[in-house]
Image 1 (cartoon, rainbow, N blue to C red):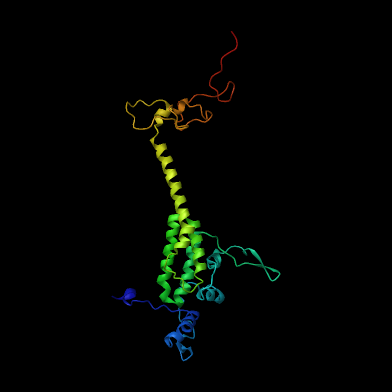
Image 2 (cartoon, rainbow, N blue to C red):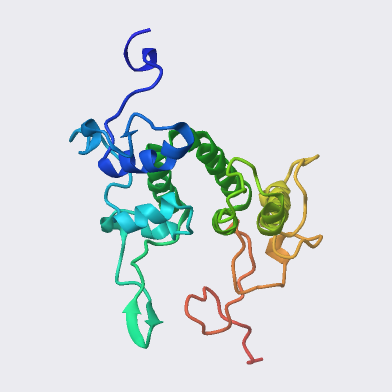
Amino acid sequence: MDGYWGFGEHNHGIPLWAHERRANSHRKTFNGTLEWKDGALVEDVKVSTNQSTDFILGNHLSQRKRNKILNGDYVDMFTLLSPTKLTGKGEKKSSFGKRRYRTPRAECTFENWLDAYQVFMGVICVAYPKRSMDLVAYLAHVRRAHMLAGETAALTYENFCRNSFLLPSTQWDLRDPNYWGEDVNPYIEKKNQELAKSGKTEAKRCRQCWEYNRGVCSRPSCKYLHECERCLGNHPASACFKNKQQPFRGGRGYFNNNTRGAPGSSHQGPSNRQ
């Protein structure tokens, strides 16, 4: 095979910070790498090797922020987006008696989290390519939580998981059963109950006979329920005394409840004169 898939791995140029990270991480274990030789970076990688056409996720971050990610420290995902998505100066916090601003954050939505996680994953993968499969598996777990339980559950699960990843022995590719049970399952049960309830209501509403509620159904064996769509009683909505002031959905055949002299009244009440 030729082209991209034929090479097996596309050799993107990478920035200097990624070269240094790879070298410093592997030189003791693997007795030197392509980037590192005899205690120093080789001449070919003392400068950035990526071209202007190479798109490196995380290049817009500060070196301090990238180091936090690569050191396994906890980072706020919503501070990793490009500056165009960050709004305001953030919340104020007290630091050594002075008032300082927190790092600006993007809005906490699942869409923004996905964008931020791409940056997070890009920074790690360019320095540690072999960790990519674990990060993709982690993304799959969070997306599944979002699909089954919604945005709040997914973001809560994700936040607690990354806190637990401060322990070096934690594996990113495995779903955490404790956090899943505490933060995702309750939302799944609640969502299923709401869907079941709304489904029953909708099914009930669809089975009612509109013509019967207008008082004009003439089918000898009507397949729809003959019950009031307002109170579910055994009478048409046109004869229902519940919420009399509101016309029922059919819009015709209901009683005229206007009082004598009320605007829109088409008839007058009985006279007191003999």
